[in-house]
Image (cartoon, rainbow, N blue to C red; front, side, top):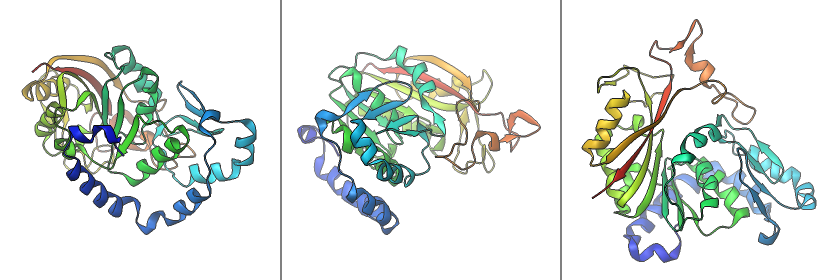
Length: 319
């Protein structure tokens, strides 16, 4: 939930009404009753006892005695939120090996971060907030995750109950709700979202409108090879994903952003996704990258499209 001191800067009544609706539909539903009973048994350690270690595995620790006494409940809480897609984490001594080794992507972004101190940062499609947690050390004014997933909310909430940092917030909103944050953010992340949108240009414009002047966007998409500004429109699925509408070339990605008003569009990285970065784990025990590729030709997806490659762009709102 957004901190109180930002209320005057936003259409807060509209935000509060949407929040109430999303909570009723997504996190208060009976599906989560069993997990909420576990959560009611959990008493977080005293704040002064908590220590954070920022690294490839974002670690939240307490005393050895606390972790030992609560080990069984901690395990039940973490395993009650399977699958863990983003990580790795260590939660009070319990190692969370997520499907994605998100630290590898973070290492591609971190050297290019702008000044973050006292800035308002948003992560659209934040999943469980792994990147938000990694940004705590830069001392921003706000780290807001937006993701309409109840599981992602509860994963974020589990960590925040222990960290208790007022700069961290999470709303069950999607990119389509960015109109609630007009010219609000100094830095926005939109990683792995745009190919799920029917209208990528309008989505890019939403990102533009949510940024303040001289704000920075980090923008990632699946891409296909080619120099021309074109996009693949999968017939049915791409890498077994149903909701992939367009997979652009890098030049197409850049044009989407430029047409939305962004300037200084810069390519930070383009990498082929490998099973070192995305794979099945005990806490993400479902199909993963190896299952999405043609077993006879790993350069192609199971549908015979080019194998997943991801590009990260950095862009600026100058107006």
